[in-house]
Image (cartoon, rainbow, N blue to C red; front, side, top):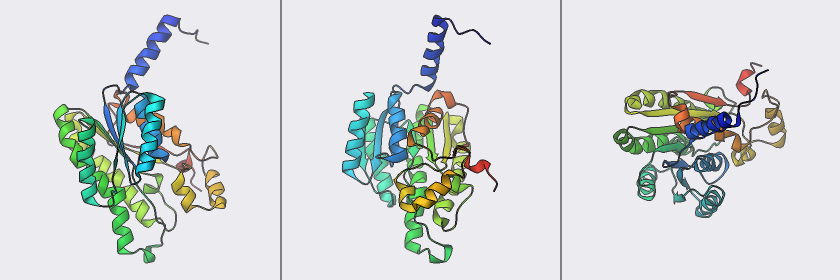
Length: 271
């Protein structure tokens, strides 16, 4: 058994760890940041010192989230109301976030939705709206913030995909297509910008119990999904704090073009 570290060395190790994951002086834009996974990730970034800007469709939700983050972390938090189902809104959001924070060092593309429909029932309107929100808005925001990141030779772009981009369920056609698209976008973009000190990664969450699955799944289905994971439960939003901090900080400086699966072992099962 190894002996415990001398207190001086233990303190030094803790300081190095804090510095490695530290984000003091950095800025972050988190889309869909007012609740659920987006709020949990924004809180984690702010907790390490980043100034954050949240976006979403509902001002009251965003205002409450910003007040909560500022109170808990002491970090600056602001918001921009935007409906990213419209391409012009993504462009406006990028401009407003830069105006608010001065620059964007970290972009977390988390905004998304799901409308379960069999392939022969999907309307053009539904397809176009979800593709714009889940996939095209991530491209538009990445395109908007990349020039500044290139100039500063540092940046982190993190797309929130899903294990539904790797496997799927019936009637998840649009959702799975867009999340698989985010994984492809991650890999291609990482090759475009790596020489400028910018990393591009995605997190592929499995079953996290937020408002979205509660709207989609019955209680029986929620119980069934929990038993498909190795840990026999759904994830908690705060359990994405570690993954997003790894990819957003210098701790993950050599990770790019990757899809980090955070699913409680759901994909480990083959049957």
